[in-house]
Amino acid sequence: MLRSIYNEDHEAFRAMIRDFIESEVAPEYHEWEKDGHPPREFYKKLGELGVFGINVPEEYGGAGETSYKFEAIIMEETARAGVTFGAAGIHVNLVRPYLLAFASEEQKQRWMPGYITGEMMGALAMTEPGTGSDLAGIATTAKLSADGTHYVLNGAKTFISGGVLADRVLVVARTSPATAENRRGGLSILFVDTKSEGYTVGKKLDKIGLKTSDTAELSFQDVRVPVEDLLGEEGQAFKYLTHNLVEERLAIIVGSTAQAGAAIRFAVDYVKERKAFGQPVSSFQNTKFVLADCEADYQAAQALTDRAIELFDQGKLTPADAAAAKIFTTEAAGRIIDKCLQLHGGYGYINEYPIARLYADTRVSRLYGGTSEIMRTIVAKSLGL
Image 1 (cartoon, rainbow, N blue to C red):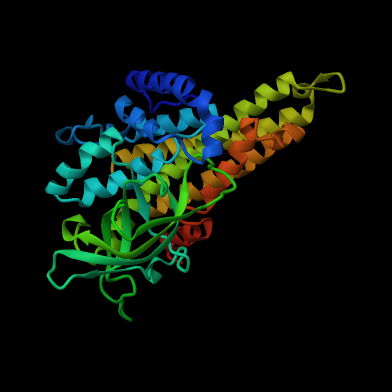
Image 2 (image 1 turned 135 degrees about the vertical axis):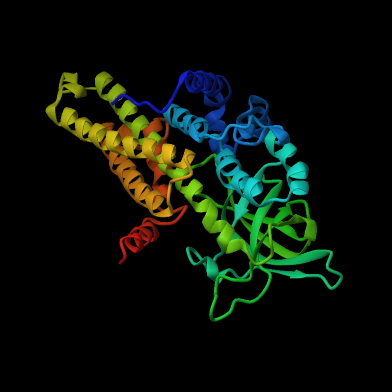
């Protein structure tokens, strides 16, 4: 189905990203998977390419672009090639929105130059071993010093994407106790320097998929964080987190749909080349029907995704809309990629084939950014239930 959300500038950008992937990513990708992340210098290459500054205002050295479409193109092109940019998506889709929306002018002047160049890679640390989706249960504490110059951070986080190579991490911590009336109160966000004494990167987690995105456990033992590194106002973290969830979920929506489209492309190419019983697998009616169903599912997901992108650009994508779109696109991607892997036969289970990586990578989309069950709760509330 013809898409209409992109113009010539977008397509020129797409061509640049595609060339970059072919020259800088694809030849090295298997090594990245073995290492568990790209080399640190790769993120500086993305900075030189301008990827990190697309949606950063010009006064901070960025391109000043307000549309999400350029970010969508990056996700479409990495999916098309069966690769990722490591934890770059965390830096762009999670860290940037917080800095631009809630950092002070002084903080933006201090942090954004390094953010844009890739000299300062960021991550977001919310989840704790005992909290999961219940952010109100966060136990990590940040106590203000007696002289009011710094916070003392203690606690632990887990499932932190980009946590191994990050230079600074947005850490959600409790700066005052919760109350019976408001369990979500008393939470604040600190932008913690990972070189701080007492800051420790623990075990690098061995995931099913997303092998080039480093995911780690973090621990804080009496970490001193200057008050100048408090993001926004003390006690307002839950409001800030809610504010940015729509963009976080849009990234998952776009990525899931792009992966589904890539899976169909990989499957079509494979069944045309693969022979069984003396003829191409593509000639069997079952193959045709399975891929036709996949294409129909994908086109529905793509139409919903494109609409979500346009609504987001207009500032009109609601939390309920994003939740509904996340349910549909992530579930559709799971179905499509599973069917496309099946058409590869035993080769679909071999990591040498990109369909295997897609199969493993896409599963997390129904977990992070809010599980499918949480999304259903949000949609149900929007229906008055």
